Length: 107
Image (tube, rainbow, N blue to C red; front, side):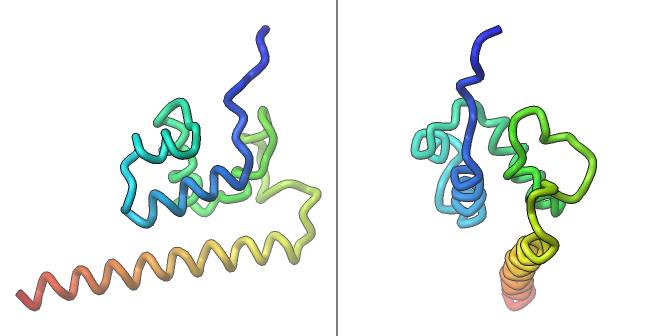
């Protein structure tokens, strides 16, 4: 079997998520800027993010679907820090949504 050349670092995955959340970039632009070869990667990472499965972003190839809440090598504190970061981002998204929804009713 050939070597998998579509290996993306956790940094790249998180950058893609941030770009997508900013709504300033299309999938095509993100793919070009970050060297992503398939739009399904972006969709998968966004699903993991929305589902609170950010630990999957750091798992090595072949471990993405393993059971559990994150790599064993992360301490409980590191896992909790990641969870807090994820919840803060979700909270920001909800606030933005509420602002947008509120503007609908003001019209």
